[in-house]
Each structure stands twice: as C-alpha cells, then as structure tokens.
Image (cartoon, rainbow, N blue to C red; front, side, top):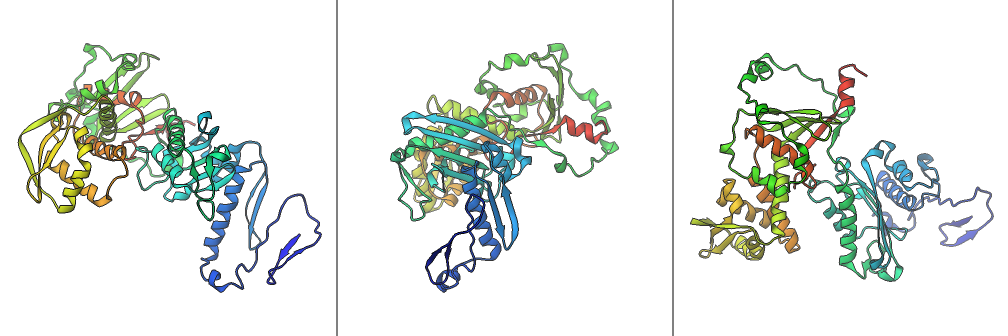
Length: 483
C-alpha cells in the first residue's frame, strides 16, 4: 500500500488484499486552503468522481469497478467482455432498445476506428455530459468531436437537448497531438476535417438505418382515455356521409411510391393550401407488399392517424411536411441555386444598422436560395426576387425576411456557409409547410404519409421535434384487457 499524508511523503508498506487497485481519498486539500475553498458541495464533488470512474469503466469493460462514498456503495460494475453491457450497467438496462451500436474503419486517417453507441433521440438529455468521448482509451471532451456528434443529430433533436452517445476513437498516436490542453481533455488531430467528417458520417449512417419513430411506453400513458363527447359522434356516424369515397378510382399501390423521389412527392404538396378539398379526410389504402388495408384520418385539422405493423401512428402534418420541404430544398440545391421569381413590386423593409451588416454576410447564402435583396437607403432593404416555391406556398415575403434577420441578429454570425444555408433552409421549410389547421384532402394525406418512408430523417422535423409517435399494439392490448 502507498499512503500519502499531511507530510507530503509517500509511505510504502505491505498490505493484504485481493488483486486490483484501491484508491481511498480523505480530507482532500486539508492543508491547501486556496484549493479547498473552490471545492463544491459533497454531492457535486461525488458526482465528478463518479463521472471520472464511469469514463474509465467504459473503456475498460474487462475490469471490475466499485465506487463508495462515505462508506455508501454508489455503484458496482462487474467485468464483462461486452462493451454494450458495460454501457447499460452505467446508463440502465432499460435503455437497451434505445442504443444503436456502430463501428467503421478509416485506414486513410491513420487507421482510425470509430465505434460506440448512439442513443435514439427519445433518450436525449438536457446536459452535455450525455456525450462521452474516448480517444485511445482516454476520456476527452474535444470541441471538434463534440461538434461532429451534434451535427450527426442535426434535425433530429431540439438545440436544447444533447444526444446520449458513447464514442470510442482509436487512431495512430502519431496522428494526434495530446499536449494542447493541460488536462489533456482536448487534442489536435493532424486531419481535423477528416476526423470531423468520419465521426459525423458514421453516426449519421447508423441513425439513418434505424426506425426513429418514438413509441409510447406504459409509463408515458398514465392518464386515462376520456370518452369522446357525444357532440363528436358524427365523426364516425352520419358525418361519414360528408367524406369523399375514392375507392372507385382504384386503391393506391404503395410499392410504386418507392420509386418516386422526395422532390416529386413534395411537388404534390407545394401548391397553395386553399386548393385543398377540406371534406376528403378519410381513406383506406392498400399496401401492395403485404395486402393489408391501412386506414387513415385527419383529426383536429392538424394530426393524421394511421397504422403500421407495430401499432397506431399519430402524425403531426406540419412537422412531417416541414421535413419533406427541407429535404426537397436540399435536394434541389445540389443541382444549383433555387429557381427564383422577380417580384412585380419590391418589398421594402426598415432594418437596423446591425441587420444591414448581417444581410451583407448572408448575401451568398440568400443568392443560392434564389433571393435577391439589396440595400435601399441607409436603413432600408428591398427584396426583389424570392424562391418560386415560397411564392407558390403563399409565404409572406416581408415577414419571412424580417424574421430571418431577427434570428441572425440574435444568434450572431454563423460559423460557415453550410451552417448558414441549413439555418435559412430550416426557416424556408417551416414557412412553406402546411400548417396545423389546414384541412387536407385524401390525395394530400396519402402523399404526406408516404413521405414517412421516402425521405431521410422523417422521424423529426428540421428543428428536432418528432413528426410522429406510435402507440404500440401491445400497449393497446394491455389497455383493453387483452393481455
């Protein structure tokens, strides 16, 4: 045993113990008042020690760990050969279905190996400690890697939430400088951009391959289901007489939809909402793949209720269409600037001096998006051209540009052209999407529901809000006493 006491001297003496290492700390900084006064509460310092031990435990699953504080057992981790089991021992076994395992190798980046676990958006947390990063077995909190992880979840999470991720990076030591931070918590890679791209793409691909539609679990459904008031009875009774039946026109073959591009589908919904038939809200269609009938209905002029093999799915029509419009905008941008239309009468707006400066910074982004805005005096701007799709969706141009500049002024300059482009496209998609309260016809509902399987990241809108939730069949059976 090695004992270090107030004499600042190490005393080595024999000790009978099991194989392993025991570290015991008492009266920390008792003779260094300047350090001791910066210690936080006992619970806060215990939490920090716990985080440090958990970080070691994640990268050494074959080693057993036991943590005690004031003779109270905080946790005990048994050795295991399975990294996922160690992860679940720390986070909780109930999260097993929520963790997605990934691993990719990049020989061109110093034999980089990117592996670990990415949590589904539903288990995101409010604090940044949910992301755990290890490099060659050592815990780090590197800003470059953190940014790459967050970018992988871009559009799946609200900005206030942090994904639950355990990321293990292994790389040739010659490809990284670990001496750029006193605590070695930050590092500098030889290929900064390559590492960022590798981490982002690895996690993105794993998330893209998963079904991210959140499912209600029993604990989330504690409130009773209220009986529908009699005033709403016509919805399922005589009210059906007002619903257009399109069976005579033939049922939709879902298999044909797979070959359609997201832009083609989005075009269907790009026309103004006033053209929609408000009465056509219920329809039954056939999935050609398994010949099962799926019903859908629009409720409260904002939600679409349908079914799939796993249960009932409730869709937020605005959030799903917003994701579809975002995908369509991004797809069209790959071919060049968006098609624009010159306004017959420019929209003149009075803006602050700071916003005028921001407008100059955003000019290349706006030009790519088919918008032409120029200075019109010392404190005024003139919007002369706008993306055709925005006009088609009857978006208020003045309101859109004013809100864009307000947000840009609030958040400051964006880091890159790509980040700025995404932010503006987010706004465009939100403004162009159908709104809660817009009654959709049967054709619009069908096309919108099909988008759930045709576009990437359809489980969340670009701002990270869910586009749909699922009530599992097992939960319905339990509620109705069938299980």
